[in-house]
Length: 553
Image (tube, rainbow, N blue to C red):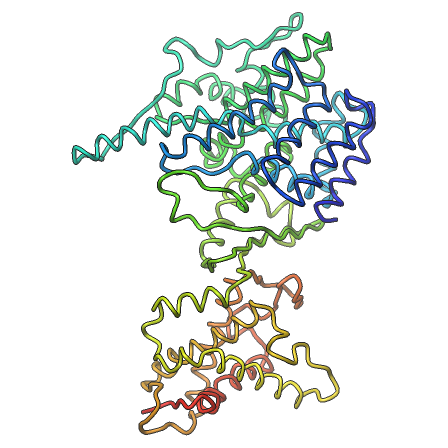
């Protein structure tokens, strides 16, 4: 199921008794999400927040307080952008986090089984109703407290500017202390009879539900968290977002005369997930008592950290130092019962494979992803306009090591490479139709692959001590030993080019999913595939000659 189908499937399985509004409320919420998928604008995002709040009659004298707070956060992060160094959108981001989580929940039965095993159905009649409530609140409002972190970063930026003016920027530490006498243990949100409404108790209970070996440790961590923020000179917006969620629901449920069950089970679960999404990576993931979080320990927290960490696309940047940040236009998601693949797509920049590999390792350092996705958790990145990017770089003089005659003929040479490849495929299988008979049949990434191969001609011939030019003592052909050396170089170049364009290793080739069994070392590929590389090397000299160029001594 894709995103649209996942949303429809989830909402259709939610019982009308699991929402506080008329059945049409689910219809309008679904419509707002479908509109957002079509056009992820601020106006459509606003409708998502409002219709979600309406599902649970979440209102007070300020109407829809959490939705209003998200609007305030969005306005704040836009308006203060001139006074901060760097931050990114959280308004559109939070809805994309929600959509990604729904897609994972609907496509992976193990996630659904674990949610039900840990939470049952809570105060709802169906698992889908419980998930919509917990996940909706966790994902949509996990950044509602971000303005206080922006304010902290503003203060730090301002002080750094002052110190910079005085020639001293080393060891500058700024902390914001909310109240010199206030600790988490002093904050009471509500009280239903004898049940505690203390923030420390609530968050600790929410985190500890399936972490029985760490009850005291977590309670101490939470109770000292505000003090630790001040002493560590940081502000965790996740903590304030969690407190705001619990405060809002406590007031709304009590004013409506509702029982405490939903608050102490489902609201606290969502709030503890929000608190964990920043706290766990920085405080617990590296602790031997915890390590990378298993989904069974806190399913909602696990899913929020996963989706929040992965949701990097379509995030507007703010701040004075945001120019060096590359923009991810969109994302392709492939989810199965045991496999998760995220492919980021850029529109104007080719991202190094090492960057996405670091992202993959970062996610695995805080979450036990191998257990949930035993057949693979992969992150990749591709550019849907690689050829345009390449020509921009050529025109800007970025390839000063490549002879100008080669650059001027680069597309003609790439076309010749493709034509020669087709000629050999027809010779091998004369009865089979060519997959891409003409150059224009190739997608941009495949055209780029041929052009990248042509651009690398200069590296190969220079490795042998030759060069490319118009006149001189010509090399008529490479020796068998030279062919073998350059073939290994060509295979390694091809592997790096594929990895940088969103391909991943897999046992069977799948062009649509960008999976290849040949993204491995030269020693591990079959002889028939090695021969493709050898043929590409043997063709360097004759293909260059079609453009009036030669390999020279």
